Length: 253
Image (cartoon, rainbow, N blue to C red; front, side, top):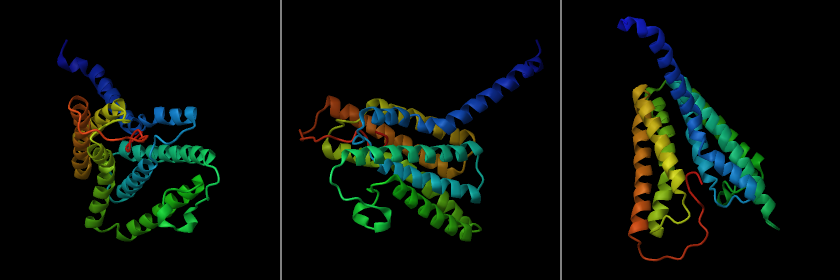
């Protein structure tokens, strides 16, 4: 059979692979949060999940969407941000409801109090929603005013992906302080690493804006560093420290 005769098979296969990669890109980022969401619903305990994860990912993905208006990148990356924002809002809603239901005689806090001491520790999901909408409106207006500035648009794109890339750093630092990875799910770190590696390769192969590729590589390095901590502190225990109940992860648990 001549090589040209295989085109009828190769072209659809390439299209399917392309669609599969795009689908994995859109939904792959939210997969690690599905078991966490189900676990919180089952146990009615949200102490193992840091809502600052939601804050970081909301900020990062809102900025990425605004960046799209200045520099149109691939649609799967845009849809990934939209799906992630929805996922983080659902996580916030569940965590807030569970936390409030477990608190007794605690003074209610709201976004309208404008008390920095209780920022992101409010009593109702609507307060978080108000904060997200306010941030979106302010940054959206600034982006509208500076949309013609190449420097502003490129900086906006860098801030979006750099914020997400730094998501694992608090976990890395906490492990270093405690000289232990106790309470952290190794399975989840492996999922981050595989997902971030796939995402970075996708950025490079599809010639996404350079900010995406650079920060994707940075994110993979952070994941690998956390895995090295798991090995180091498991096989070469450091000085013993007393542990209270840890959040299972700063990044996703």
